Length: 204
Image 1 (cartoon, one colour):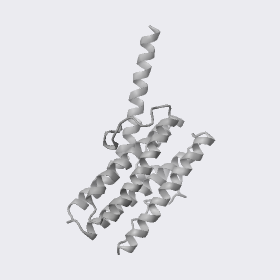
Image 2 (cartoon, rainbow, N blue to C red):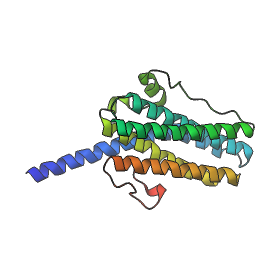
Image 3 (tube, rainbow, N blue to C red):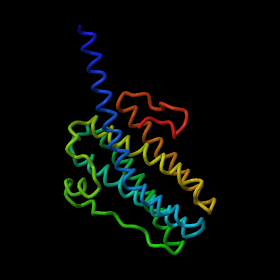
Image 4 (cartoon, one colour):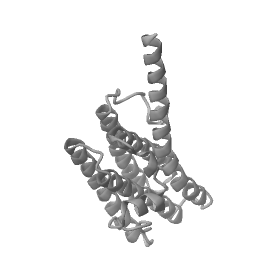
């Protein structure tokens, strides 16, 4: 009986984790799919590349806001808070280089939907984050992991779409960082950090 109860708990835990990963990917998907569809309608070339760069920049703004919400939630212990803030700094570096590149190519970088100084509830509302579902540290880590693997897959999809090979290389460079973030977050959750041999096959 106890074994059956434990199996039931394991199943509920699995579905809970899957749901939180899904929320992370849903947030990325709702942000990126319209932008990618719009970019696909533009013939490959400089304008197409600018669409892709701004799509990536918007995703980085989203990640920065997500880690801000995680930090302000007070649900992370000091060691994991330090990791979260480090990852946020990585996304800020990604955003800075993307914005600089967009300007050099004659484009206008997209701006964040809301200032990081806004209340946590406003940040979550503007970006569609599931604030009501973040009840403990693991919830925050699962949500962040979902965002990271979603971002890695999104960058993977953009790499072959760039007309400029240097931009494709830059996207692949950032993709690798997102994947490492995902692995570290899974490890922090006590899960195997690299659950598949290919980014496209990583569980969501």
